[in-house]
Image 1: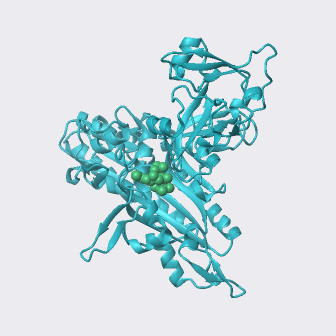
Image 2 (image 1 turned 180 degrees about the vertical axis):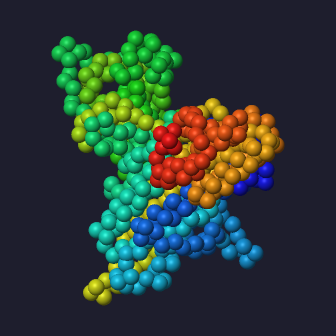
Image 3 (image 1 turned 30 degrees about the horizontal axis):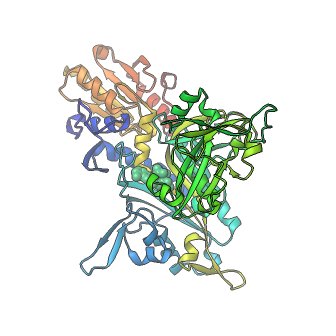
Length: 584
Ligand code: ATP
Ligand code: MG
């Protein structure tokens, strides 16, 4: 392919709305263009990279025994009403009506459609297991579409759904997909980690996210430094603390004046204590009733854990006014020791298990402008319900082996989920087992963010000049840069490009009549893994190679080069990082 004929509109300046590196480079490199918030057009380079993701995904899904289907993007409301999600799914679901006023949605995910398909055609255990997947455009009306392809409203997903006769069978399907995902992200050349993820209200331990490690990632992950444990902080369970003994000379809790000091920092300043010596109160509306979660002053509450501990359906941070009306307690000065005349059923109190391990603590006094000091949780707070309520952080003990947890940021590019009978039961999807008994399918679902992968790969692989694609994701694996319009140069460049093409290397020849600086800048920005510069030494048939990832440069004779490059690219396509050593 010749660059002079390609639609490669690179830009010097990033678009104003692009805060993240990947967003900037995708637009500047001529990969995507914004059409509306969270909605993008893909230009030729963008399509090429996206197609490369799809190809790897298809190959590994097919190899794992899944079969490709193509389901409709527009889904009739009936199916979603049957599963119960039509009412539950919030404003992320784009709902529409046709000319007859029949209701539809644009599928944000396709459990309903695939369950309907399978329940109609699969009648016997003999047809099981079956795993169907598709690669398709999804729509989710995200509140905050951001970072280009990272969180779009319209985006491309690979979604797969397994159907099994038994729980054991479903676990095996899950493991098969887990293994396939490891292969896919390895081949794509990404540094990633599968981590345990929260399973929402479905329960069980069978959900893993595949996280691309990048400082700019939205997700917080903890991983053990001593064993294999890794989890999203939302999920990571923490070990309970032992009760701390009450110090011998400790007074009984007593109130001190803390006028105007409502925040942890303000109280700490006034009483000269540290956040880790305080008990922080977070006010909630749990299924319409007031609840308070207490955690140590330096910790963050994990709402998923709070929701589980309270056993509630809906959990929201409470508005102060509403909370005062419902309980009469003063926000800002709330603590776990309620006044004697307070009717305990008016508010639910739960405390993070770590609080039990505090020797002494400072907390709100439930009286305006006052806090309690000399609180000993083992002596004074035994009336509370303790549970694991906080976010895991670096340094916490691993729940599996006790080793120290380390913290990472990640971008979720894939998700495998054991669903059990959540959808099949609601939609009455059954088959006949060996005994001729009707049974409900056991299901799993498995997503990959095809377009998000492009953003994640760039967040992980870039420098100030542009993208440094892993070979497997690059729109072209190599660019031949003809540095000048002399016949020796243009002919050698054209010949090399042709040899590379014949050797199976995805190559573009930059034959544009542009200054070398422009060509170098574009090549660095676009991120071709290998630049082959045909210039000064063209007459000697010697060219310069630049490996984009490492920045290494080397000079090699043009003769025999294509074969060597082709060999290196085979390794690159399998996920290996391209280096000068692979080219020598
Ligand atoms: P997130 O927590 O990031 O919103 P999710 O849990 O809603 O993701 P799933 O429903 O599991 O995501 O979707 C499967 C995959 O689709 C995700 O792992 C992610 O890679 C991708 N994905 C989800 N939402 C978006 C989006 N708005 N834009 C781009 N990709 C997305
Ligand atoms: Mg989401």
